[in-house]
Length: 426
Image (cartoon, rainbow, N blue to C red; front, side):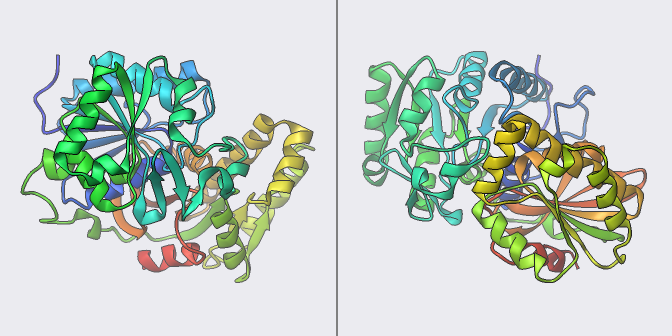
């Protein structure tokens, strides 16, 4: 039985950077947004916000485990009173033929008895657009963009209907840009035709904010919606009419004293440029998974280096590397072990740094962000000011002290992001 709370929209994100991304964009509306790390262990209480986001770390988990996590999150959100669920995944549709986008969406749809599932990963503000079912990154087809070389989810096709089809059991159809630009009647007609054909899974185009608004107008009452953060950001105007932008709690950021540490595990093209830009200012250490695999010597050397840095140095520790170097490490160690070595090391570094006075963490990469946040023992985050589109400062308390976390998806932000993040917090 649902509780009577203020909660109307419950969001489930497949990684931690995606969770802060969607929470930040939803908070632009002025609606109170809660952000929880993992499925809450405690029962629902009076602290539930009007919108709740649950951050999972399931993008690259086995399908069964990802589905189980998402179902648990959905159960908690529905118990808390959520009237609608939103399954949030990356705007570059990061997945494989097995999942996890489709299987989780289908499981949630079954739990909600939803007849239709709409998929819209587009994020025009960040250069992610979908045109007649094909996904583009800054005007380049997904399969020709740097995402084709992603170490965990290499994207070798841009056609979203083809990417989704092997992940789901129901039919897949397209709500294309021509219908969206044709107005409400055209959108309704297209959706009706797909429904008549028994198409349950509907991929939706969007190349501009107006397309997202048109789509939201048509489907905002669906029990389940899925996509990127930009589509979700159009829902508050319908769920909370009249409340949009009447206040902005994100500007009320606490003062966080202590050192700053930049941690980068992402190997995306933009993160590599950000690392190179920041590295030129000094105080940087590159993690080598091959060296880490040889024993504890490299880790001890790294911690000694970190402890020797001046308190105000804001050093960077990074595993970001070119595709060739990533491939060599994966061939030698295996993709899973190489990734785990980097994640566990960066997580250990974060925990060590916290014990030694670091309170501000700038983290690049979804898997890295998940590992670091868990290592810091954080269970809830408060959304602060945006550094770049989809990347806010977030805040938590641990042992009576404030922690600031900027969790950045690999390709978000510009070359100067790591420095800009520190300027925003001053």
